[in-house]
Amino acid sequence: MKIALASDHAGFRYKQMLSRFLIEKGYEIKDFGTFSEKKVDYPDFIRPAAQAVARAEVDKGIILGGSGNGEAIVANRLPGIRCTLCWNTETARLARKHNDANMLALGQRLISEEEARAIVQTWLSTDFEGGRHTRRLEKIDR
Image (tube, rainbow, N blue to C red; front, side):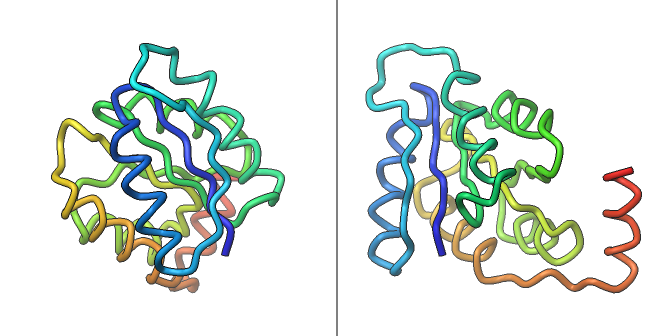
């Protein structure tokens, strides 16, 4: 599975940590930046990552910032993106199971590294349930 990673300066440290974590788990990573903690504007990095998910150039995307809110907003502006902001494993599980989220937003300032790894692991390992949820997703796309 190929995963897009992107962050702004406030999510850079976790992006780097998650990149190593995911590579160790056997995932292929496409890193859209940023590449340091120098202050940047998050849309410049998040939008290209979301576009890659929307075009199916990658399977899923993980985006990071200080809170993750702005990053999720940018991603969700694109058709075909279902980005969820998660802060624990239960929100990550439900985002995949009920919403078939194809992008995950995390806030480096709000969760620990251990929580971030657990959220990512849960999100990646949970399948979409389908059923009544499919009908709801179709309504979103109309």
